Figure 1: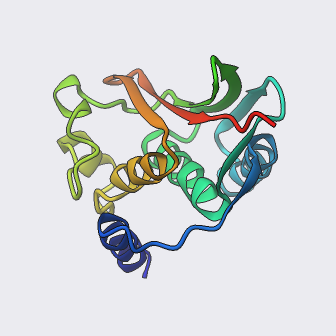
Figure 2: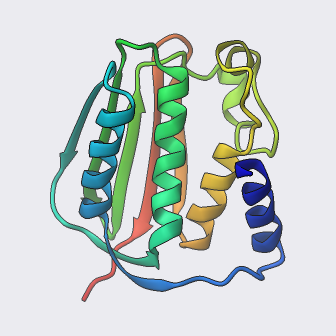
Length: 172
């Protein structure tokens, strides 16, 4: 069901036939709710966050929530039981910057540029979690693109991954 929903979302967004519900979104609130959820479903991992302030963006609440959940789900999948997951939010220039960081298996350098391609999964990812479908990061990138943002990955194999999202702040 989730695979079909993700494929439909990507297909609709490719054709720009995806209805958005744009509103002011307080990113701090979404991250605080997400931290509670992570601690509940993944109590064997250490979860931390640092939120500078309540930053507000214009966007689709459901999509931004889905974006962050997707990134956190990857952290959980690819980080050992005693691993660390961190979500940070702060202002950088005119953007809200969200860093989602883990100390999991990391992404080999040769795969970093490929992970936003649909259905792409590196060997290490397939070995650690054979049930994935390679749509999580392409979906995340599409959501960021829809919101006129930017997504970056820094990763080192066996050391972990940091995904940074930059979304324009709604200056009221």
